[in-house]
Each structure stands twice: as C-alpha cells, then as structure tokens.
Image 1 (cartoon, each protein chain N blue to C red):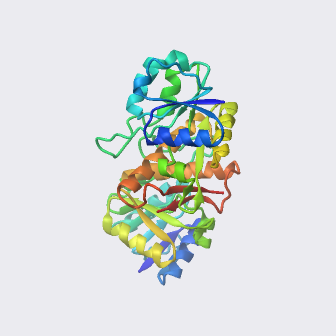
Image 2: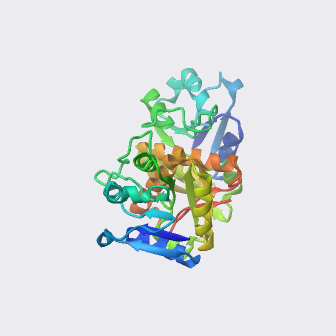
Image 3: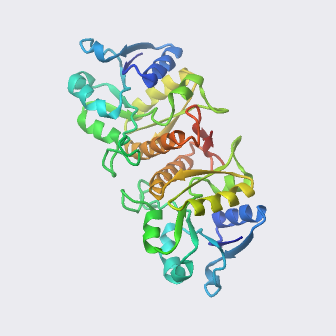
Length: 190
Length: 190
C-alpha cells in the first residue's frame, strides 16, 4: 500500500517514518510538490488546520475515493483558549463536508510527534486513536499503525473527532504550560 | 480540613477514601442526610449530573463561600453519543452559574473510581486533573489529592472543564466498547 503524506513538518515526517517502518511505500509531498500527483491509497493531511483549505482547493478532486486522514488540532493560536471550528463540530467534520467523495478519518492529533518517533509516551506504548464512519478505512489505517510498532484504537464514529480534538488541545495546553513534556501526554492504557 | 462529599456511590466513596488517606476529616452525605448541615471547607458533588440541580436547590445557600468540586460527566445516556450541556459550555460552567458565591472546580471526571482506589492507571500513577478560575481553591484540592498518594495537575481555567468533559466522555465510550477496561484509561505522563 502507498501512503501519501502532504506536509513535511515534524508530524508529516514522523508519520512517514511510521508507515515506512511497516514496509509501506511513502510519498511525502511538500508545498513545492504542487505538480506531483497524489498516488497514495491513504492520504494524510499533515498540515496545520489553517492550511487545509488550500490543500483541498489544490488537490480536492484527486482526493476523491481515497482515505483521507485529518491530523489537525484546530487551535485558535491567537488566544490559545479555544478552537477555531464551531463548538458543535470538529475540523474533521468540516473537512469531510468539503470532501464528500473521500473517506475521512481523524487520527494522530492526540500523539505528539516525539511519541510517534520513540514509540512510547513515557513508559507506555504510544496509541493512535482513530475516529471515522468507515470501518474498512479505520482498519486499513490501524494496520499501518500497528505494522509500524504502535498501538491503534478505534475511538468510534466521525463525531468522536470532537472529543479527540478537545483531548489534543488540552494536551497541548498542558505541554505549553510545562505540566507535561512534549514527549509525554495522555497514554492510553487498556 | 474537612471535606464534605455529597453522594455515596463508587466515586463518592473513592474520593472519601482518598481524602481520609491524607488525614483529612470526611463528611459523607447520602440522600437520606438531607437535614445534616454541610461542614466541609471543600464540598464534592459526587452525584450524577442529572441530580446536581436538586442538590443545588436543596443546599445551594449552604454552599456559598465554599469550594465546590464538580466531578460529573454530563453524558446523554439515551444516545451515549453526546453531552447534555450546551456544546460551547460544560457542566462545571453551568454549575458555577448556579452557584455564583462558591468557588467551583472541575476534577475527578477523568479518573475512573477504580483508578482512584488503586492509585494507578495500569502502571502509571493516577493523576487528577483540576480546572477552575480560583488558584487558591485549586491548590487546596491538589494538596488533598497528593496527600492521598495521587498526582494532581492544574489543567487551567474553568473553561478547560469543556475539554475535561470531552476527555471523560471519550474515556467512558472506550471502556463501554471494551477498548480499555474500567481500571485503565488515559494516564497523564509527564
């Protein structure tokens, strides 16, 4: 399987490493690769939420019929006190509305990049929480995560993206205020 | 210091044990103790969110000038798919509005009762996340938690109760769907 990752920041690189570790082909696209066609069965949007609209405008039609993974935490960075999406929605639900022909998942927004690379949150194995309405798409992504040596947990329907974004935001506020480090956070313990 | 706990369910009992372990006096009040006056400096509302309104109606005036701790997860149990509080608010903000003369905190809604009793989430020490606008009240509660052998983390202002309730709800959905156990959950790892 080929995984396309749009965005070459620390999260994009960490997810690329994870997928490669599991033996998958990885296509890593940066902003200068605008003329390169997406080839992945699964496409990870590893850009800030503020940049997602532009990616969809540029590549929306080529994302049809693919699994699209939203990893964003749509934090209002002006206040660091709320999200920029409607309070009864989520970035993922907004993206899914803009990509009606894609199977959109939420994942990777509750795992800091360092915990994807190290494989652990402190002493606990890193778990990627995945939400979405397409069970087959969730299974495909979970298989990539586990092949890369991490745990994956199905966190429910697309509407649970709201809770995952709240968790991701809370975790960022705890790290920014030095209550936790950027290599720690919320470990998922069975 | 005396801690009053209103509610004798598994959470009320677990919080009573925790406070007693730290050497504090505990007043544990059940529904038949309606004529007993609250004596605690800190009052924990350890009842379901649906019962909080009745407690406030009965005891609201005696809660003035006290620290009041809301531990609820205001889940819509009819659907188990959302909360019953407005999407831009939280149970804690609603309770604080109803108790303008109390210093209201959110805490204990992200720790299953079993993890308060055992002191651990899996192999990780249990951490109680505390949100509120009164720094002194948060410090008092954190001291009770740490005296009882658990960790406490200041999770920010009262508005972070929204995120804590999202986390608590998500954790309940994961346990109900057997992705985690009721002795596990989200460990807070520094």
